[in-house]
Image (cartoon, rainbow, N blue to C red):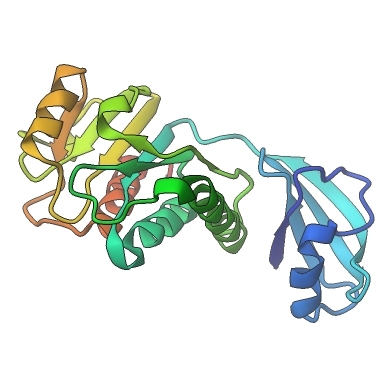
Length: 230
């Protein structure tokens, strides 16, 4: 089943949103083929395709899904080679609630005056990943921040090979924020600053993961530990 996104979708909607019409047409949907349209807030309209060329649909049912019991936020450092965007996409597929791009001290990539444009690009990637993974909640991509300006959100855990405790040993709160450094990791003074503000350091096993895989791996571990995947 193909999924679409329309923040204004209603239980009696009879047409795909104009923003999704190109995608709708490109799939060459057949008459009576079932589709799903989410509003990104848990609501999903299940409908049938009536006319693929015009976007006309026939509504069948509307369902409201519950949010996961554990809220997971990802703070992802900017990285070269598209590794930050790979982490973003995988995190959305796994069910992360929000993503914050981070300009860490060792981040080679800098957004500069393109910050707003790149934030929008990340949000579009999140929308595509949400639809591909058939999820009803759209993670919000927040504005770019620097390490010193990052505010604590729930239980904030910094992933670091130097962490004294493995992530699997943590007593997890209902809201967890995971922080992932760039290639080369966070600088020592950044880690000291994080600890001074009440952030916790955690390691993921004995191997050192790339910035593109550390966040998704930690998200998957938390979902297993909290029973989200049960």
